[in-house]
Image (tube, rainbow, N blue to C red; front, side):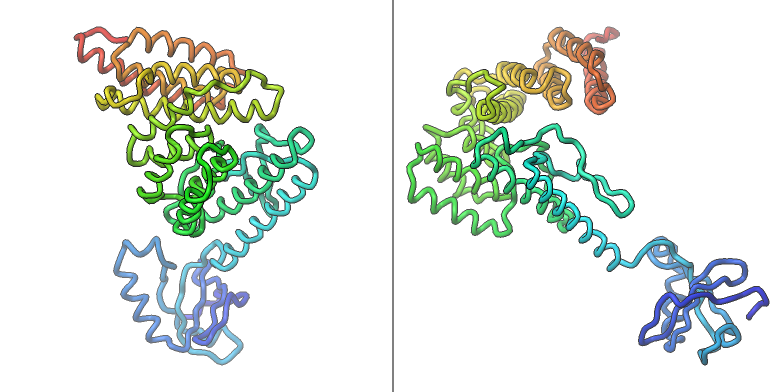
Length: 411
């Protein structure tokens, strides 16, 4: 029934089945729905109101309002539905905003490239949306046009544009993949994996496996396949096992590690066994080669650790040990980044975890103590919070394990 302080405000929406107004009814902000098909909509809301689990998924229903024709100037049904006045926006507006964000980022990246700067690490964590604006953060991995060859610049900008598209492609998929923070070569998933697989096989049929340019092209095609066909992997493995480039070994090792750690380590270790690139961090090409080698060592160390934990040491290539691979990876990461860089620290925690699995607790304490000391001296301790939390959980787990083995003594 209409009360003296009830009133109807602006029109929220209008369609073929009636009008919806913002209203203030019985002291409560509401939607005032005056449908032409009143009985049908009331029947639906009556059923919905009896199911508590639905209440947080649908607009709350407050009941029927008698006397709607007394509040509205236009002819209408005398009864209206009272619904909660929701805060938010229709889906089409949200999707339009996302399109605006994507267009704004594309324009930002275009302007950056025109200025001679490639961001180098486009991913959701480095994109900040505030109000109507979009900002790119973290320029810790830039590529400057003035410092690289034209071919390297063209490749870097092409990969960056693909990375931006991939960010929004992931948002469109319920099975969005988690990418490494600095992949090399970039993992850009093909729109058509079957086509990418055919391109890989076509390359195998017409080029020489020991040609570096061919291997780099093959690595890029292989990295574009989210779930490579085992036959494709086997063909690449057979063709490149004897002389894989670092880029091809990394792409193939990542793909093989999904199904066979033994084959993955064989390929990775064959590339690692080649001479290391020159220790010249001032040369861009040498530094890029060293970064690829770091990815090789890191992946090989983790694969070897899994094999050793599974008791499959006999299946590993001669000379390959997780202990040695972790030490090489940590030394290179400390040189290319710094000992307390978050990525370096994550690698060091993985090494501590491996030592714990081997049961060499004294080494665990020594390595963990060095890690904590470097973290304490880091200029930005906050960025290591997650890494240190992982280390703390690992040490607590180890302490409980040692107590269980030795009685009352812990680490």
